[in-house]
Image (cartoon, rainbow, N blue to C red; front, side, top):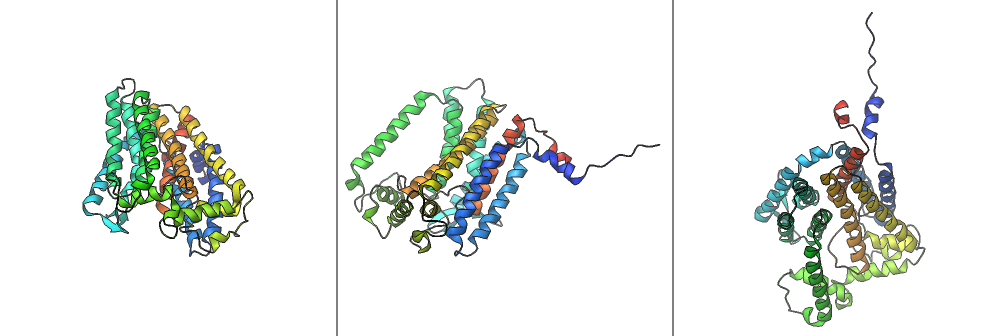
Length: 390
């Protein structure tokens, strides 16, 4: 008599895929996504299909997060060199025969129009983590010099497009990997001091440097204008300074408790430009006030803390560096966006994670969170062949 073999049900096949997920991380993502949907509904309910599209983009990002979380970090490490090489090659293609829109050459047609710089937000820290993993136990100063070259190559090509916001994000992600890999302080202090002195000189000589007709050789004219507008937005209140001024007015008018959901006057009377994308934080602040801002900022800080905690318990140098880089990517996104809307940083076109409208940025964040979840699952002992069993 042959024994009857019971086939596992579909549910039983799917259960291993969710085993050992970091549910604290999922909870934080869920809270921030809910805040993002709430803010988008208010800011974009009369802005076409922005709210529905935002929800669709979140679902797409969630799917990417789930798929990437099933990939063992060892396999992600194998993708580091090919992804980085492909990304840099596409950036060169953009430079040679890219598509220009609104004065920026950032896209290339490969049958479908793509923006290669988005790939480098993940490919660059992936490549740097791979490099330091290969040099583990024998790192020298020259290894950090090579790492800086690997970082500055894509950053320079992205700046050439020009795209200061994306270049800043790629730079921050790469620098976080280099820092957590053990960058010597003798290489950290000089550029930091140089940057502080440079900023102090710009502020001190602002009337001269920002006078009409003065050129900054190391920046494009529009980038110089952004810095000068930050220092004095009233210089052109109805032009270049309009964004910053209206953002600060909206944030200030929210007070402690905010004006209430869907009750923001600056938002719904359309004083806030780009209220569903880069400046949605101003619309959110007006309606939910300081209390709402504290909830959002706390959510981001907890997400960064969770990412760094996952990095601390990772099994290899590669996974530690990747998890730390992802955590710092979210910190940079949130800090730069809130800073530029609040008038303490130049306007550079960086979205607020989960809140700002944008399909490409949402997909990139889903990919980054998938990498973080994959590292967390490996530490918790998730089976590496669960994807094959499906």
